[in-house]
Image (cartoon, rainbow, N blue to C red; front, side, top):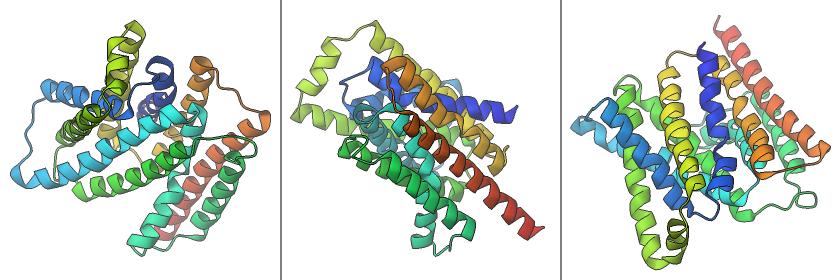
Length: 293
C-alpha cells in the first residue's frame, strides 16, 4: 500500500510540467512557484496548526529556501522552457548528481555500481539531449541541473532533521517559508517588469483556475503530505520503484495535454534512462545490505 501511495505522489509531481504548459502558459515562474507553495502551506497549517520552536527556525528557513523557493522557481522555469517528457526523464538523473555531491563535499567515494550506473545515465542523457536531434532551451537545461542540485542539498538538510521536528511542522512551514520568499522575489520582479504579471492576471480564466487548483491541492498538498509521511515508513527500494511514476507521468501528460511527440529512438532512450536509474539504485541497495548482513 505504501508503494502505491508513493507512486501517487510521484505521479502528481511528474504532471507539473505539462499542467503548467497547458493551463498556465506564459505565467512568470516565480509567481507560479509562490502560488503553488504559500497557499498549500497555509492550508496545511490550518488543518493542523503547529509552531516551530525558536531553535528550529534556522534549519526550517534553510529548508524552505532550498527545498521550496529555489526548487519551485527552477521547476517552473523548466516547465516553461522544456518539453514535459524531457523534464520528467531528466530529473531521473538525480542519483548521478547526488553521487558527485557526496563525493565532492562529503568525501564519500561512490561504489563501482554507482559509477557504472552514472556513466551509463550520462551517456544515455547525452544521446537524448543531443542538440543535433533535439533543440532544447539552454536556460531550461541550466534550470534542470540547478533543480537537481537543490533536491540533493534539500534532502541532505531533511536527513539532518531526523526526529527532531514533527513531519507535519516540517511540511507546512517549509512551504510557507519558501512561498513567502518566492512572493517577495516575484513582487520585486513585478515592480521591474509589471507586464509579465499584468497580462496573465488580466486574462485569468477557468483553465488557469483549474491548473492552479491542481498544482496547489494535488501536486503540493496531497503529494508532499504523502511523501513526508512515507519517509520513515518505506525502504529505499520501495521509494525507487515508486519514483518510476514521475517520468512516466511527464511523458504521458506531455503527450495528452500539449501534444509532445518524439521519435521511437528518443522514447527508447527515455525508457533506458528510467530503467538504468532503477536498476542502479536496486543493485546498490542490495549490495549494501549484503555487505552489512
